[in-house]
Amino acid sequence: MSEPTDSVLTGGCLCGAVAYRSGAPIRPPSICHCTSCRRAAGAHAVAWFTAPTAQFAFTRGAPATFRSSPPVVRSFCASCGTPLTYRHDDSPHEVDVTIGSLDDPSRVAPVAHTWMEDAASWDRPGDGRPQFAQSRAHAGD
Ligand SMILES: [Zn+2]
Ligand SMILES: [Zn+2]
Image 1 (cartoon, rainbow, N blue to C red):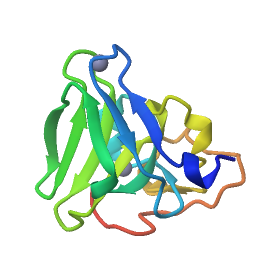
Image 2: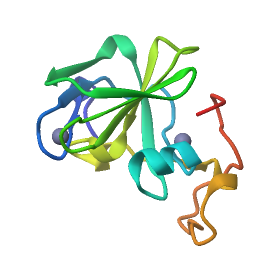
Image 3: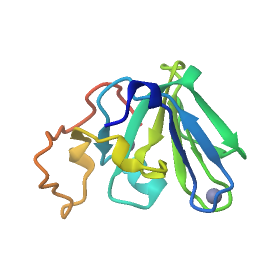
């Protein structure tokens, strides 16, 4: 566990062109199995944490962005493709950040699986975390 005074998280993309710092998660993180995350990452699921927008900043480079649905903007490294953030127009004070892009992903542990109704037939987590058919908090991807 990190000390309260060491709550700043750092991360970045695979090639190193983009780096960021973030405040601590504001709610329990989850692993999303939705179709949009799957395609955006080229992976069966994506682990996310949510931080206050005011406590998140890119410290090196700038990501490319893509609207995966009308209210949603996803960012990624334009050079190497690492998925970095998710922002929903209805939640301008929050930003979701990929746990997999953290320098130390062990510092933020997801507690649940979301959007299992979209999961591939072979994607059946056996880790004991609760599984939800759709979202726990925000709707739409
Ligand atoms: Zn990169
Ligand atoms: Zn998703």
